[in-house]
Image (tube, rainbow, N blue to C red):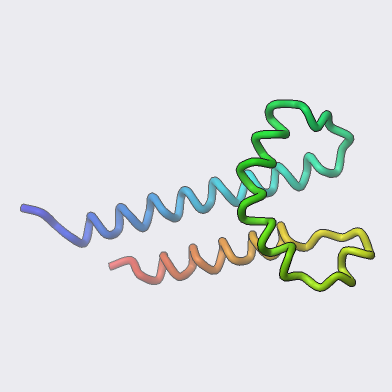
Length: 94
């Protein structure tokens, strides 16, 4: 017999785990940006390709005043959004 509770909880668990994994990829990209790394390194290019589709739209919506200071708050905003979505998903558990 098919139990929808376990199926939904499993899907929520998978989605939550993937969001957690993506959040850590963003954290690794931020930490890598603090050091002088070779931009042609395959790992650095991978991190850029994976995170830029989410960070780019956030960056475009931030005020220009933040850019003149040289600070990039888009990873922080993305991580906060991921945490909010994870909390929402966890509240849907049956």
